[in-house]
Length: 166
Image (cartoon, rainbow, N blue to C red; front, side):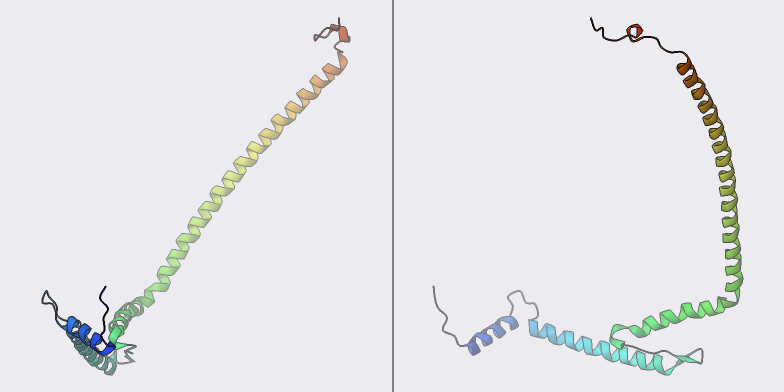
């Protein structure tokens, strides 16, 4: 195995040369990084310009749009949030009436459910009463059978079927 006798300085220089010159003709790492940084600066400047324009103009004459971070595009997000809020304000006078009708519908639904449950409860009570009456009649019949068994003895032990002792 061949040992490298290069100093750290020459090793770094060789890596830099290798990164600057590629076999397939693509841009080197450093030139890609530089173009990326230039593009990022252009984006930041454009976002700052948009944010300054949006921040200086007032929407509806009252509220200024506050830009949180121009690089992340929050100005556009705030404008998008403002539009639905304006629509809500336009619809605000109609909202309570709509809410009242929705509540009335919910109340009607609940009342119908309560009525159905009351009817179901009444049917269950009727069924319960019928079951109690049947059970009571079975108790009476069982008691009568028990009296019959007591009044009519089965006889002696030898008369009963079973294993014989002989």
